[in-house]
Image 1 (cartoon, rainbow, N blue to C red):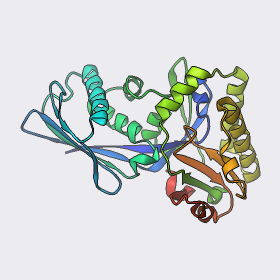
Image 2: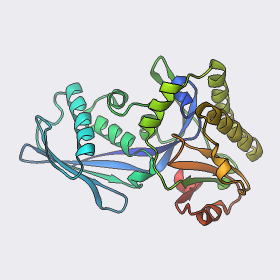
Image 3: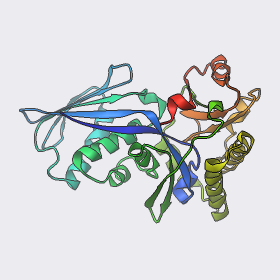
Length: 298
């Protein structure tokens, strides 16, 4: 049996702007996805994907040579997986030349938006011995910060220069980490659609890119929770104006702290900076899934 593992992720800063060259902070998380491969004596690829509750949420059987779909419980997901495997096979013709039993296991819920796609891409790329960024570009798209998080065990400062990924490992261990929380909004956001809509509608001024990059760098070095919150609030204001969407804090006006969307606005997780009992506050708002910094960030 062969095993591959990739970390999940959150994007602390630089959402949307990272696609235009801004520096962004990516945080690998303690949860992720593994991929287990066993050989078979036939010409089938028998694929099963398990969610955090150990239940199968996706299953498919392919022919290993043509990758034709024989049977599946979700044709839409099967076609996406088929495309990923076909591109990997084009890049490495020695990939999938015999039957395999494949099992993937998520340690977070696939609905949480923490990288079920990026961890899959990175795992398949490791297995097929191909470039994960190319595989991402040809399938889901995006900046690639999530792929960088999948394969790094520390926070990263990520940017694009002429579509080339620039990745710097950085330290992010704030003195006030006991006041940082990650809350799920009870709805998943389609990052690919959000990015496409943003790119179609918006262009970003170079001055805005520079400002976002400065905020990212300042977030890494500040030792003051007050300054950190002010930087977060400024970042929210900038992205809110670009997207013409109300900042998240408008929905939590009685919260004694700051909040920031993480990644695609409108769903998935957000960051809360505030009192130590913040998780209780958000539970009272009906947001029952939340994590402290130490229980979440790698």
